[in-house]
Image (cartoon, rainbow over all chains, first blue to last red; front, side, top):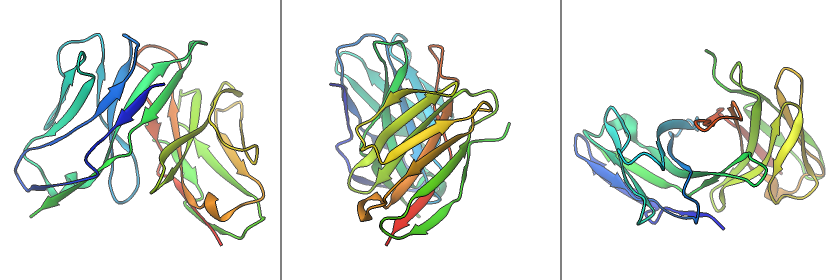
Length: 117
Length: 114
């Protein structure tokens, strides 16, 4: 069964510094998508970035980038120039295709990021 | 384009009651998925509806049910509420098809069962 592991329940970063959140997953499939979602204290879950497994190039969205290591089944999120607004719970998610051709998402347990002023 | 909306945002019920939560997806999205989020269990998948049909289902008891209307709006119903049903219920919408399909979440409904 596919699983998603976020081994860091909580992390802290100083404002303007860089932080990396870890995510590993277990799968035997070769075609899948990976996502990072951000859930600020207001609870609205926001898509941060996504990565297609077939693309070797790491996805980037402004200050957010990923380090996708397919062989190692690792998908870490790097936040550069951290801002107070980055404080949130971050969830890593894996999307797989079911035998009927639909999609199911599996989420990690989340990493709470604190940004220190 | 308006995002995913959920109503109500907060709800307090007592054990044994039932509750109905509503979710309006992003315009054009035909898939609506429901998740239960608790501090101990994280996000647990409840079910997914696509074009008014339940397409996927998680491991929740039959007290949890849902439906989807022709305009893609979805409702989730929980009958005979238990204390353990207290959680944030998240709805996510997506196109439901295509390789690049991605879920977008609503703000959630916070349910407290007393």
